[in-house]
Image (cartoon, rainbow, N blue to C red; front, side, top):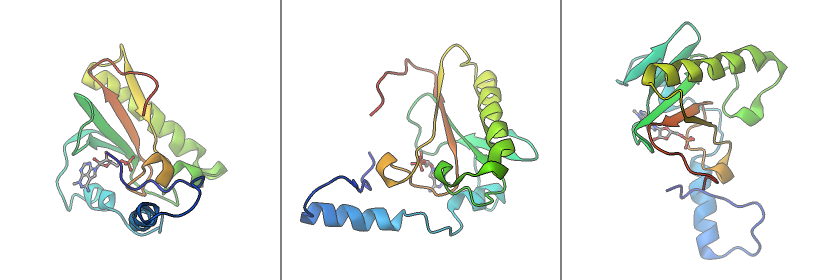
Length: 145
Ligand code: TR5
């Protein structure tokens, strides 16, 4: 469960809201290196599903479905979150989406899978290195939470 929501549309700060805002600040987009850099550099182990020159895909440590893989660019280049994308990122964004399809194919979930990008505190983003969640292996419900 995401506990870092800072709702921009909330009115009147309660203690709970202040606590949530503080928690969100910890996970804010500071541009600092993230745990994913260590995974890319193989400083910490991960369960890699797919890798090419530009993209790395590895299993999420806290899976929300039988298949839950994260697809990330090996070079962040300012893409802490999708909302920071500009025209120069078009190629890598396409490569990430195509890699998500390759992952789905490798994992045998082409019949039904979901690709999710959480962008910013109100969407529960917790790691500020752009990543696509590829989820499947069970019935995915709609609407999402
Ligand atoms: O909440 P957002 O969309 O930012 O997704 C971040 C995802 O990274 C979450 O689903 C986490 O479970 C996942 N995560 C966090 C860590 C981690 C990871 N997946 C694989 N390996 C991980 N390590 C080693 N360390 C993490 N802190």
